[in-house]
Image 1: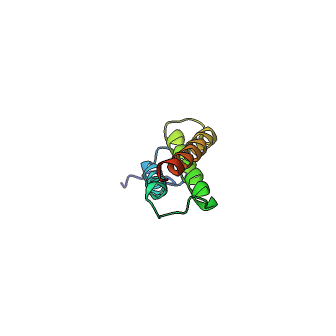
Image 2: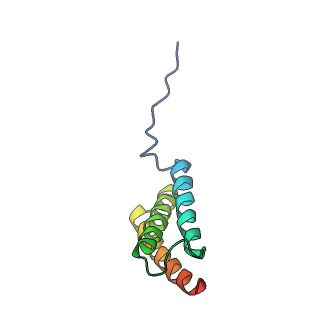
Image 3: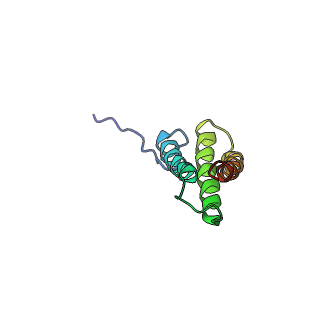
Length: 93
């Protein structure tokens, strides 16, 4: 009389908070690096791509966690990452 529990795939589970936390930690890391003087060069294109990608992934996981469209979240997060990168260029001057 053993009870069987259904196997869930943690990668496709939309209510798995681990992906939100991991992507949020990476987004915070890259955004923090934008505001630390000397961590990235202001004319580097890698800084804008990193901010856009990780903010987009974080926003997509949050949107999926909330039951909304992940692509919409990715677009909103990428736009936010772009704006944060522009803001960091003015703040660190």
